[in-house]
Length: 251
Length: 286
Image 1 (cartoon, rainbow over the protein chains, first blue to last red):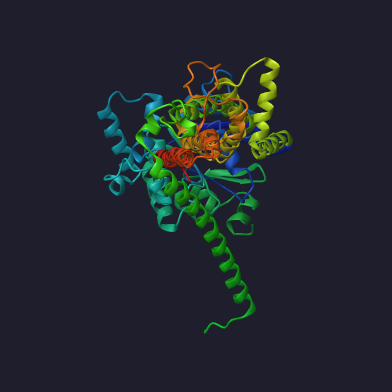
Image 2 (cartoon, each protein chain N blue to C red):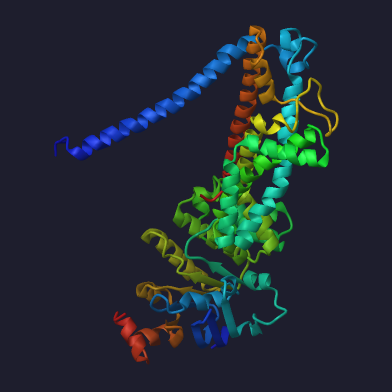
């Protein structure tokens, strides 16, 4: 397996409570990896270690290594903004920046100075809005406030905004849990389209969504990785008793 | 499903009537105040009132205007608001960043709320005592300091509420795109908070410009427009007060005209602040 993210001996503590227990996993490139498990099992905590977001929470202690392209992102002289540029995040609820639709997408390109002139920005904004499947709905009102969009549109805007930073990896923290079924379908469709170009790691607590999206599955329970493997194997032939119990809906 | 008049429906009707009644009382008082000021002040409001300082015998009904008080009030409230802003923004940021919801933060907010409620004459008397101990006379500087003290709690608490409403997830959204902390503060947080901060500033300015008691001892009163911080200065509320105290009907009419000018300034500021805040908050997350 060609691993894009490698996690080695990772432990995380909230104060004295251990949230992640000695995690060792590899996440394949250009596929959708789904992290599933019951609420409070550490899925989101694990996800947040991939873009150095967990440390934003007060009182968190992290030990171990997370390697992206073979580079440990927890080493001392790592530029955290560069990590977050490479590893994008689609949050649970969309939070547009307090600016126009256009500026939301252009924001990342501005701060990372990836474009040279106005024309390049305009083309890039259009491109990423198209990729996120939003352009047709907003092309006549690019300068309207991002908050004027519906919540489902906002989430697609957040996807476009994240893609515009040109990441290699996209993390999704239950990215459809705040959306209505139609909007969820939109987002899921986009994610499936994007896996040819990006490595994706999606957290979900709905088993059906995991089955629709996953190429590779990580099942967590009480802060541990119980089982990880290709989706077909894990869903059809789980090796662990706890995975089987979860898939059968026992908890 | 026909409606029957049970006890709970009657109670609702009574409470609703009481609510409407209190609204009518409030709206009616406001209308009455405006009507009094306009009907009595407007006939006396002349161009020379706005453009001239008092000439000899102005308070006996002779020539002149209240330009000294208009300029004086703008100086006083402008200076007080500026200094209050310099102090209150750091206090509000410190409150949110380091004290947060701790017990110290609670005490500081309680102290600010108490200060907010203190009658302005107390600030005036306090400022006067401090000035005496420094050997200062009633002056523009003294008035500005008194108004700074009066405006500080209003502005600080206003900003504090704005900063407290800042959604954490918004900062995280910007951080997730690889922003530095400074970029988050300068490009995102400021845009989210600016309308609220502008509103807090103008609210404090409006309170400062309309206050008579705080500047009574500290700023004094004069017919001239001050040219230095150490000279005494006139203010609109005191101009109203002094003219109203004169036994001549012409001067009393001018008092209402002065009140009208003050009201228009305050009205313009609050409408202006609403307009600015509205424009700035177009993009703000609710």
